[in-house]
Length: 169
Image 1 (cartoon, rainbow, N blue to C red):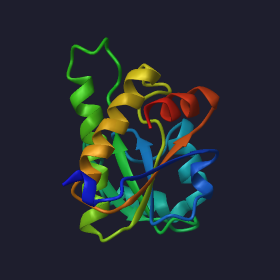
Image 2: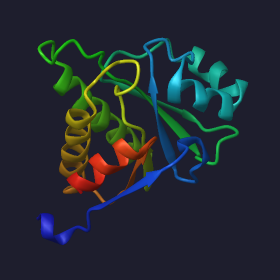
Image 3: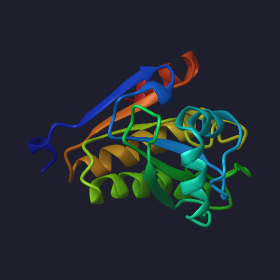
Image 4: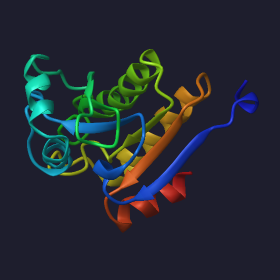
């Protein structure tokens, strides 16, 4: 029952690479070899060992997730997930985005992790509308947390993301 579990979602505005959690989520591209935005920032902060491990994973499909060590990050692990590129919402983008959150949380659970931090997946260069993405994130995380105890941090890069999350939580 939902009432028996304490749903633990917090919002933090700042740099996801500085968080001391069990895992941070990387909004990666399909190669997993680094890129712009949060992906590039995580790769730079983690060091070259992260890139070396990512090369062994042979990429990742949209909506899926893979886990690596955190290396020079404060987080013990990085969970890489590939969000959908926004094409107007008619090409399965909402379900793929929900899959990103669901599969990342599942990987964290399977690896016995107790805390995870998410960026706003797909809302940068992939063009997903921030309000729709925030709603999918919060709904998917809440659904997962009805079955599992885990601390989830939604990391807002800016004031707009922070306000959207606050309104939904």
